[in-house]
Length: 256
Image (cartoon, rainbow, N blue to C red; front, side, top):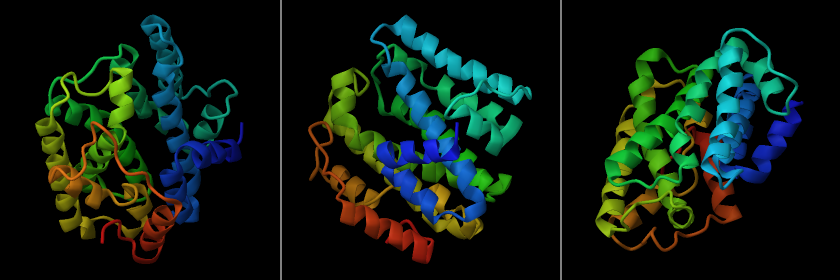
């Protein structure tokens, strides 16, 4: 039930956010580590059973515990919830939305249109990034900027994982190249908008906004047809990850 357990989970299963936490200011790290560890757990919950009803029960457990925390009730001793409570207190209550958005994953429900993907990304990556950015000093008036950025980063991550999602029945109901091109363009638009307005965000929030390595290039190549994410996307090398995080650490920028 320690912060170290959350950190180790991130290091193993979410190296991009693990690296971003290391770049964050010291006072923000406990909140980010526990938030991202929670995100890992609720994302896994629908896949811990092939039976939709059992998957729903696992997901509901997280929703109920977070709702209780929001009402001021400490959670039972738990590797993630205990340090989350210490870092967030009753502020963890609204994070139940991260789990609520995963119900369709329990049902192995694919997406019929790009707009459905965008709505899902807004409800998952969008909620996650706004919670992180707020804890890193982002003001309420910057919420739309963070939402644009989260949409771009979230769609990029979804496209990168699309071959695995298709195999799980969580990708596109019909595998059409035009749909992934539309999504890549929507993601690029979101990141461009956020880049234009980034000066309205505190520099302290840069770590919370990290979209992952080589995201603009990936989206450009998908939009142009040079990469087909329905088949495969290029793996991120350790060098590329380190270079991207070094740029973030030294410049506060997540784009070239």
